[in-house]
Structures are given as C-alpha cells and as structure tokens.
Length: 266
Image (cartoon, rainbow, N blue to C red; front, side, top):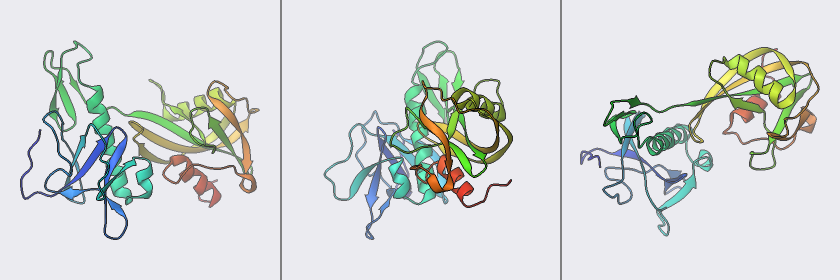
C-alpha cells in the first residue's frame, strides 16, 4: 500500500462498489474527505491510486470492501447522485477516480499471455511475463438532438432507468467517424435521416468509462420506426409538450436546455 508523507493533506476518493464516501460539513453540506491519512482503515490488499491533482492538491482513490455505515461523520452516495452534493470539479474528479478503479479491477491479468499485471505508472500496467502495457480505455459514444421545426426527436430506451425520455445515443464503432456514428445510430434506432450535423460539447461519463460527445442536427426525411430491441418509446415532442427529461448532469439535458433557450445555431 502506498505511503504518504505525514505532512501531506490529500483528497480521498473512497469507493465501495459504486458508492462514494462523503464527509458531512458543519454547514450541512458534503465534501470529499481531505486529510493526511485515509479516512477509513485500509488493509494490505487495498491498492491506493494517485490521480491528477485538484486545485493544486494531491488526490488519491481506493476501493474498500464494505460501505461505511453507522458513522455520523460520513455518508455513502452513489456517484451520479453526488452531482447534486458536490461542487462540479469534485464530481468530475470523483468520476475519474471511479474510472481508474474500474480499470484496475478489469486489468488484473494480461490479455495476451494471462500472467499477472503490475502497476507501472499512475495510469499504466505492465505484464510481469511478456511486458505488454495497458492504459485506461475510453468507450466513446455520441448523443444527438434532432430538430424538426419546433419539435425534437426523443426516445426512451429499454435500459433507461426512470420514466423520462432522452436523446438517441450509441457507441462509436471501429473505423467510424463521429458523424458517421450519428447517422448510423439514428437510422438504426429511428429510421430518420439528418443533415447539418454540428458538434455541441463533450463530457466524461464514468458509468463506467465513457466519453459522451454531443451533437445536434436537422431532420431531412424518414418516418420514425423504432428499433424495438433497443427503444421502448419515442417520437417528436414540441416545447409545449415535452415529457419528463433527464437530470442536469447529463449531456442529453445540456442539449435539451440549449435548444429550449435558443442557444443552438440554425
């Protein structure tokens, strides 16, 4: 287990499965523990990872075996729920920490020869037998808001928790540009063709290790024919008749809000 200098305060991003340890503040809020020592007792088998600093302060992350309960000083929070409890830089750093822990868990053994992997740098491992090196991998996905007059195309995939509607999204395939992925996913999931595909923004999506790239586009043709294996419900919705929409932590909501506010270029 990594030793820390006794005079070094660091931010501790401590996870148990997908829950993050938060410390209650005097003002009634929550914060990431900031201390010289880990906020919980660690065992020999726990691996402490160094991640990039936050506001010039060192950061560490570690996965523990059981959640912290019955302690009035701390609480456990789902990573996504922590968006509403933490300042944005801390939520984003917690997402990075979760991705590093996921990568560590999934790369215990070499994919080439099966030998154990050993940590080489903060973000790489090297096979103890053949020398193969691996780094954290990102799963890149697109999400697209399609406009048709005063309406947008919204869908409710089978795997979407809650009763709200989102936007068409999907993972980028090998040998495919982002724009090609936008066209393919729209055709596969809805049968709709678009033009004027434009970049909006991107965001890390640590569920478990994604990069979400947002676009918006204009409808050209096609009746909505939902891919029933993927999409439960969907259709065109106007500003006056929007269904329940995703939370503000999501790229889908950012795109929808930008459309509602008139911030998307024509």
